[in-house]
Length: 139
Image 1 (cartoon, one colour):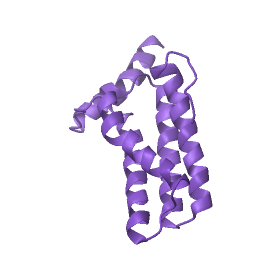
Image 2 (image 1 turned 45 degrees about the vertical axis):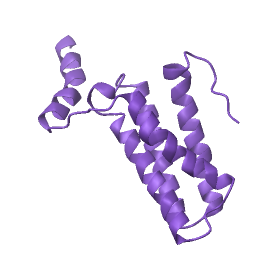
Image 3 (image 1 turned 30 degrees about the vertical axis):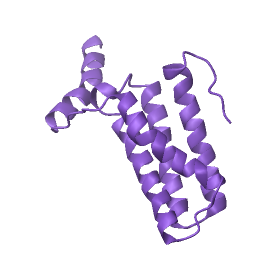
Image 4 (image 1 turned 180 degrees about the vertical axis):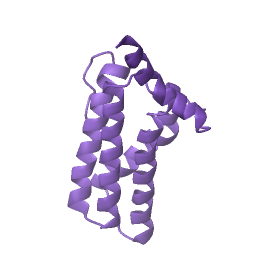
């Protein structure tokens, strides 16, 4: 039984190594370079709604970046654990995918709901992993 558990825990890391995937950026770097700017672009829709094709496309691109960032958080050494971390990263992927779908449909109300789901995914992860158990202040 113990051997089966060890093998199950090591398989994802072995698969990532065999696939040639080599994470370079740290979690902080991903957050600063991709996650924060992408989520801010989506959150800002609540302040100023996209008014033309270019602005809607920018929101779509932000949603793609945010969604794929969630996938990157699950790769290799970035995955802090196989349980909670993976569920929270998956929540970010799901919330980002919803934002993409609603931005593509140009449905502002649904995009605002997706934005709320992104906030929840962020807060749920920040509290245990970044903020040491303290609630994230939401403005």
